[in-house]
Image (cartoon, rainbow over the protein chains, first blue to last red):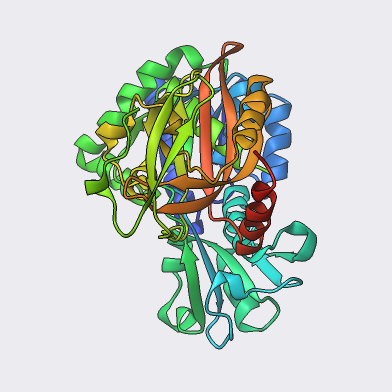
Length: 247
Length: 157
């Protein structure tokens, strides 16, 4: 039976093909069958993890604690692309800083848990939390932008990269208030217990991916510069950090 | 910890003596200058089980006013401001030593005598069932909560 590989559902649609190619690459490197599966939601993916139906995952930092400390996954490598959050309002909003946002404001966001968490943390200076705001979940960051532009939301949470990738036309109708600068939290490739003993082997091959033109092209299709090793203590530190931030 | 040095201080300052729980004391020099919390940043540090700083991020270094080499290996009390009641830190240590997460509003002292407020969360770092240290993560506090903390701390020792 093939191993199961999945990717955190917050990848951009442009990267789907790249992840398929990455799966093919992994199968060749590890000389084993791996089935690539995507999930529509974080909840669906977590359910699969709980039921031990995932063996390899490019994981959202929010899920790292569950994967490592409860399901025995080990960290292999990370592209070290820190997840940062941009908070924006409509361009014509009278709000020019976080502290001017008011109780009852409507927040448009995707179900990306680490962006949602950081967004709520950055609203705390305005005395805002889940009890005095309304959350409107959108399927994508472009939908978050639309919700703001169409007046269905007062403020939006974006993955910084996704905000920067919006068209000039869309961005001209939005006003960014703040962008996080944490630098310590990023997605990580993890191996489950069945493959954990191959961590060093996979790690070496990932690190050398940037050495050849095909590898560079694959990295490019994933939006990465390179893979970087992640040791156990570094992973535990990121998990501690996430646990300190979770309400 | 060394006493603070007047040549490092920016602005008019007052001299105060801080007495630590281990019986040691330190002369600190404090001004009224507040450094605003940097937008979007987290100030992160780790200590060993005795409270000595083992790691800190760039935001920690910048806000403290110290060089990183002046921070690593120092007790976290390096940043203790005399306006913070000892009871707040006693509560922190009692909480994390029981393996629990602690939250609180903290006024920190900078090398130049100024201060900055944070909303801090401290958790124990557990490795193979053993506490190996503590991680502290600080974020921007609301002004209202800071004012409430100031009132509360004024009545505490």
